[in-house]
Length: 435
Image (cartoon, rainbow, N blue to C red; front, top):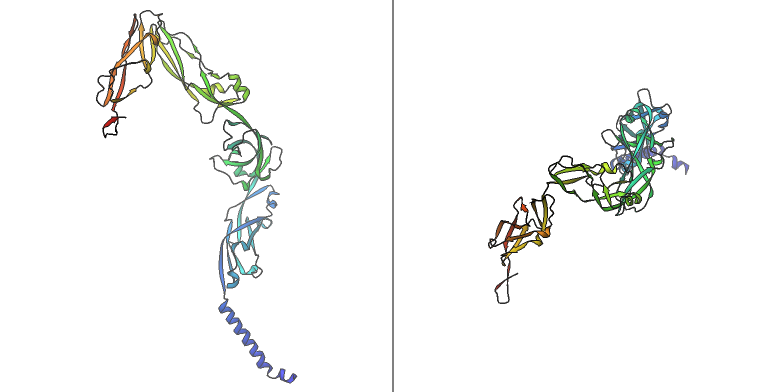
């Protein structure tokens, strides 16, 4: 039996080698070795504290991702994805050329390190002096509280300032530090979490990953967040705006009226401050009419009045200015406004629809020979004759004014009347009838 096994041994070994070579040939045909590229594989930086320990910071000046060329059998390459690779830059290996060699590992055990080519093979960094400075934090709110409330005050629990550490060039570019907090739909005072964001002098957001933010005592802020106390104020509408008038007009003239437009404003404030107003806001600056002989209009800024009370302000997006109209008339002159309902209408055509402009009242100016005389709307009779409005069109028609004795009209009064035919609808007999 032993003789049979060893008979033609060399021939048997040759057959085995040939079979193995044939198997390799077939395997290379069905499962060939080839190369595949994996692009944009991110670089993970480790041991960055080795740089900060020498009071330096680093800035990556090359690409923060690489291309991997993997050479393996097709069956292995076909199952690989980008997440199977980890590319690291160990800052402890930083050399005098300010470059860090890159290393790569694959989670698939079938792929060894010598089958992977990394392009580029190193990461270029720039070292810079580390700096720390203190900055004031501004609170920015987003969203709107429940109706009837606005944000009155905000206060950061950790303090008004933060300490920011990072590259000196970055800190020199910081323009504003903002804590952003959402107040959407809140209806009472609350303590809310806010995220710190840093903006440069152009208003562009800066890269927070390169900055270290601490509170005013030097405690590192977790996830760059602070707590903000939000105090809500009440919104109160229809507060009358008043203005004081001082001085005396030119002799022979008198003050006949002062009006403010708009007449009322909406304010936001604490309940105590709003209640103290008593329903009206008296403007800080008065208006002088010394030696004035004609009417005038002056714009006045409400915020100048509210500046004296830190617990009051205008509602958001309200116009800060009001227009104050001061009417000055010569002694004996009177301006009266007569409602159109007091107007006697004569010869109104029955088949026309009529509209009037102005639509609510007419203004008339009268003069009294008795400078101390008084006149009211009830003392005046006004009428208009519409006998010309028989055809569609626009008509400017004089208003007839009858005044008491010793009074004269100083300016003519007229109304613009628009006449339109009434629409007619057919009746049951097919005849047109007026609507």
